Each structure stands twice: as structure tokens, then as C-alpha cells.
Length: 187
Image (cartoon, rainbow, N blue to C red; front, side):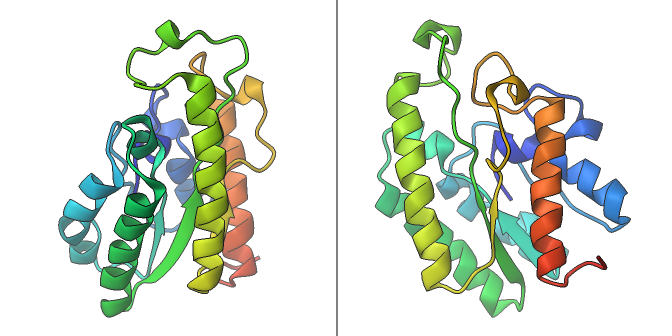
């Protein structure tokens, strides 16, 4: 469940991290990422897109768009918490995905008109939110996937926000590593 980082913005669907993970592990993964979505949008479609599918696990990753629209981290965490409560009630194990950082060096604000705040400011907000989300996951005793682990600027599209095909491969490896540690998968 997520936004463009889950949907695989700007790359072929077959090369996004969730599809790579599905092929690698030979398990069914349903990608419910929608580019431009906020955590409020994710919450609004959680029943239809997640609960009705009756998964054993859900990875929730969002917040980048919320921050670009000027929404507060407190509101974003509230939406995460509501999705977590719905998942727990349905017996679905929830895994928190930390959104990727932004590599803004050399990028001008006008390069991406979809972002409403300058990339440097958004980058700082995302880094601060990632820290808050990490604390939240720990407080809720939730597993956490850091999708930024081992990510570098060349693993992103020219906007510095969305991982390219190679970046999605790194994201897949980050997810797989955590899932193996949780013994969800065979090592």
C-alpha cells in the first residue's frame, strides 16, 4: 500500500520493487501503489485495496506527497495508525516501509512542477519524518523496511525523488532482507 514509490513511477511495471520481489520469492504480491496519493487517500482505499484482498501481510509506505502538500507529520502518522488498526483487526501483519530520501543535489525546483515545496525543504522534511516513522514503528513493535538503505543518487530518476529500475532492484533487496529476518520467507 503506497504512493508512487510503491507504484513504480516512471519505470516499467515489471521492474518495480514489488514485482521483482514477487518473481524472486515466487509468492503473490498485490501492488496497491498510486502515484500522487497521500496517506489519507491510502486510508480511504484501505478496505477495498487491502482488507478485501485478505493478505497475511501488508507493507505500508507513504507520506512523501503529504509532506509536499504541507501536511503535518502528526496527521500522516495518524493515518498510518488508522491503517495499522484496521490491519490488526483483520489479523494482517503490518510492516512499515520508510520512504526513500530525496537526492536533490543539482536539481532545480522547476524540474518537477508536481512538488509544491522546494526539493531541499522537502528533503529535510522527509528525513525528519523518516525518523518519526522509525520511532512509531518501534513503539508499535512493527517490522520496518528502510527502502533508502544502499540507495545513491544514480539509482533515481532525474527528479531525484523516484527510484529508477536499478533503484527498485535495491529496494527489492531491502524488502527481501527484512522479510527473511522475519522468517516470513525461506532464507
